[in-house]
Length: 77
Image 1 (cartoon, rainbow, N blue to C red):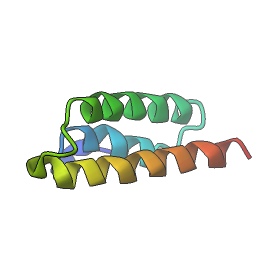
Image 2: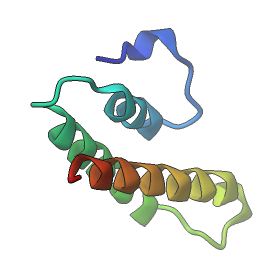
Image 3: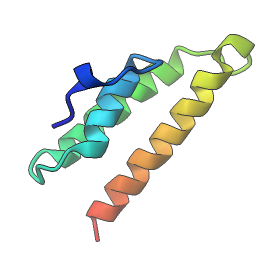
Image 4: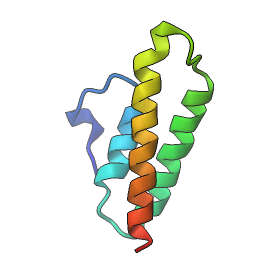
């Protein structure tokens, strides 16, 4: 599993996101993706997309959710 202490992240939710991306245990990956998506969506709901202060994080969240969805779809193949 990803050691979050080795990485600096701009947003708190990025640690759980990165952990999901690098999870190699097939029995844990779906739960890891689901957990990351839940945390990221909760953060997304607390941001104002029209507030310029949140603009970069809103974009980062959009990218992260897209990546997690793609990863989840690739596991279904």
